[in-house]
Length: 392
Image 1 (cartoon, helix red, strand yellow):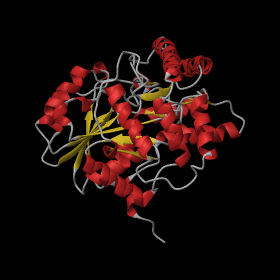
Image 2: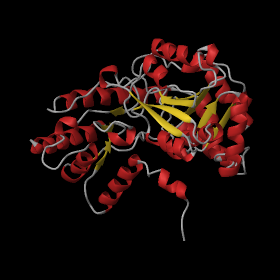
Image 3: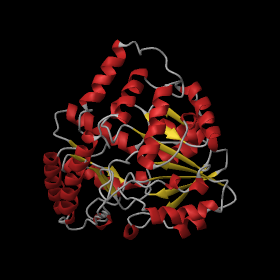
């Protein structure tokens, strides 16, 4: 019995692999501090939980529409208008089982065999594999540490060919925490305006975890309105990872295509979550702001603490909840030759789980999530420092 050849195109995400390994080691009685997953440690706000309970009592336990309840699509439309000054009609919006499914829907709706997809690196682990599943070709463009891992307009222009069909990026960025300013987005937009056949997927799932100011979207430039697909969701900003709800907005024909794809995969996402999402989007944002404040405190501690460790090169990420230090100074010490080997060393020696930067397109770095308590971060840094000192 032979399985499908497409399986050979993709790998299990390293983030999930390391989290799984951490759980297995904890089950064996080991005291593992897991800094591998991007999952807020906060509870979902009470008013959102209450809305879900009420939804069940009100009978919202049947199949929902594939693209989402009309009230939810309207709430998302209102959110874009209120928070981002962007106008999307409800029929230009749809919801999926997480932002990941939104990206998969868009990728499968846009990319044909042989189409090139430009992916700035470092990138979220799933981008490249979804390109491959859609039979596209990944064109990786490397951002530099000295530019906070962001690419320039000139790099973008140099990467475009007649086969370029799509560009996908995140801001705030997973794994680096970097944020493109309005000026930087405008420079990229000026390039895309010259290439109206190129679609842009803008992953904005970390919109509310921004320590520098207001969120900026590349969709704000009117000339790009028919090229941009915005992907967002509730998992990060509302501590709703397990609820599994993402949403997207874009040109009506793209949204209709994504609805068609989704109708054959999962149909509509969880009906109860959808009702709770209406409350989340229309309700009190103070819990989100409180989480953002806590993340900033953790960021400030972690960056300072890691910079005290000899051999680590650490930038100061203005968003998301990750640091992405360059660890290449440790390559060649004892049996460490790659970032993955260093991650496994830290897991074994320090019992701290991180993720290799190679999974994100940068083999010199590792990703450390600070979506956990300050006490756990302090203990993790103590262990990491001790383990790295033993390497010499």
